[in-house]
Amino acid sequence: MTRLYRRRDVLATAAGGALLPLVPAQATPDTMAAAIKEVVGTAPLKPGKVKLDLPPLAENGNAVSVSVTVDNPMTEANHVRSIHLFAESNPLPNVVHVTLGPRAGRAFFATRMRLSTSQKVIAIAKLSDGTCWTDSAQIVVTLAACIEDL
Image (tube, rainbow, N blue to C red; front, top):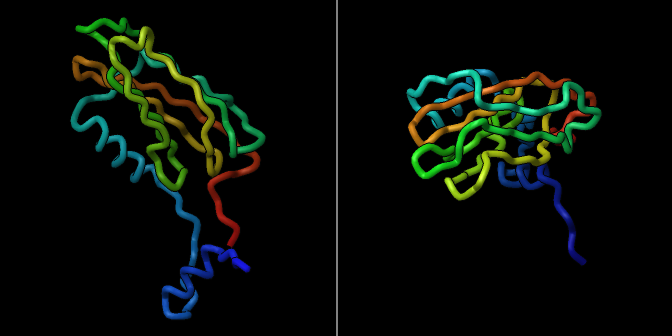
């Protein structure tokens, strides 16, 4: 008979039987800023070109619909290289990374993401010329996701 172990049981055993204090991981605005800097480097973030479509209220943070559109031609000389989504209070702030090329046709993607709580979400598009464009939105989450039962 196979026994299923909970995460906290495994951590307690690994610590020599002593129960480790477990607190939910949560990013902060500082860790999100560091994650953004890791992606964009020293390039300034310009508002515009990017449209982040996110509901202002989500009843359940386990599956929040989100889409990002970038108003930019997708030619060999001028195209969107990547789109990134950052969530300020999720355990890992860099939530989504999409790589595109000139053959993509248009710079758009839609997905669902988990959000741990009400927070700010930021979309950043990196273009082939090295510029970075951004949009952001606040969302209120009534039932949080990304949190483990302690």
